[in-house]
Length: 252
Image (cartoon, rainbow, N blue to C red; front, side, top):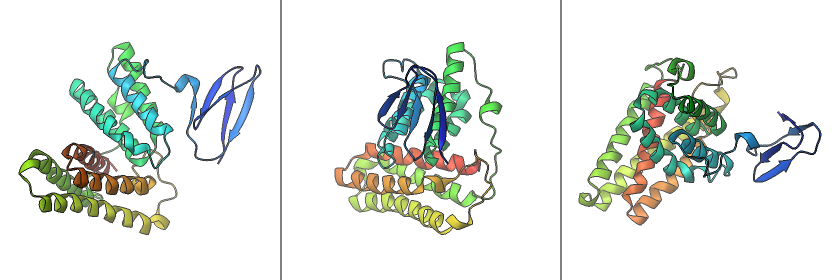
């Protein structure tokens, strides 16, 4: 379905890497395809990212504007800054979980809109209404196995990170390979069940299938980099992905 955008005179809109400036009269654009689209008023420069929430917005904006196969290269920055915000304001952890859920799904623009709400509250020096922004019902039944497996693998990876220098290369490969194979199971299951997906699934429901190909490709590549470069720091994003996906499954 084409996206229809009404532009005011001289208003700008970013389509992919191309900035389009409207003429001196109102214009209606009909845009088809998967290119990221942002009105000028919704874009943020690095200089403008002067607060914790604004910096989070800027990072997600960078993820959104990158091609799908490169977007997750910025996940290291995202999860590192997420930890900073969570430590500063633990009371908004539910909202941050919802933002992460959108990143895991690949629905980056929706994540940006949630962060914009945080920016508004940050500007007003108020707290967000968590029930308003985080209204997903918690259910531990349907996805309990996925939650348990992801949590256990995250614990194994964290333990590996903590004892990296004392762990043999074979044990490192075994733990990292297990996590990769776990995500391969999710990948295979998503492909197998693609035709069985609910056609009227709620827009805000967690749907791993939306982004599973990109997620698995990233995890496969990152797992190889950790072993090849003997770099334990690259484990941090794999751990964060498991934990945030586990939280999303709990609320699905």
